[in-house]
Amino acid sequence: MDTPSYPSPGYLNISVQSEDFDIGLELQQLKAATPQAGALVNFVGLVRDMSVDGKLNRMFIEHYPAMTEKALHHIAGQAFQRWPLLGVRIIHRVGTLAAQAQIVLVAAASLHRQAAFEACAFMMDYLKAEAPLWKKEIGDFGEHWVEARTSDEQAKQQWKLPG
View 1 (cartoon, rainbow, N blue to C red):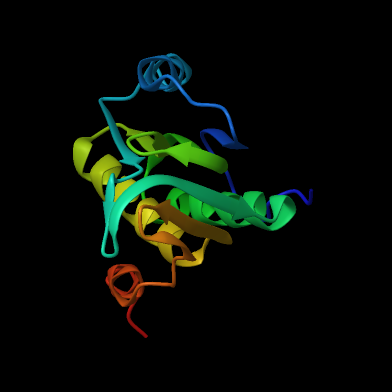
View 2: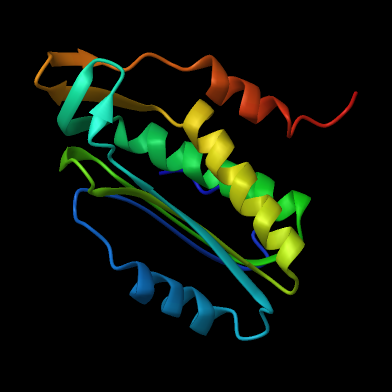
């Protein structure tokens, strides 16, 4: 994989994996890597047990490894450029996940809470709209691929810089 072309002044750890993760352990590692942090903010996404079509039993998440990892590095790099971050941890799971399984962890460490909150929200909004991941919902209704949501693109737009 190509080396990211952005400055990464802090701790950065990105994983795309099929295995589950331990939120507490991941946050402890981010905390240990950024001892000067005054704030650590995180978001964890879960597989819902319902979709617009009915009861959801599981979700299949497909990705293109080189593209997905590069996109996540790019998103983290943009966050480092916009906010005074000390560290970032992103995990996105792939494969077949049961209802209520953890899908994604996005965490940011900073000296102050506002930067960590904003960076975490930014990274999640961009991940939802930009990362090359494809989701198939499987439930009592059958199965179908999830289409891109207008709301994800609208959430991303709030972070556009003027000009």
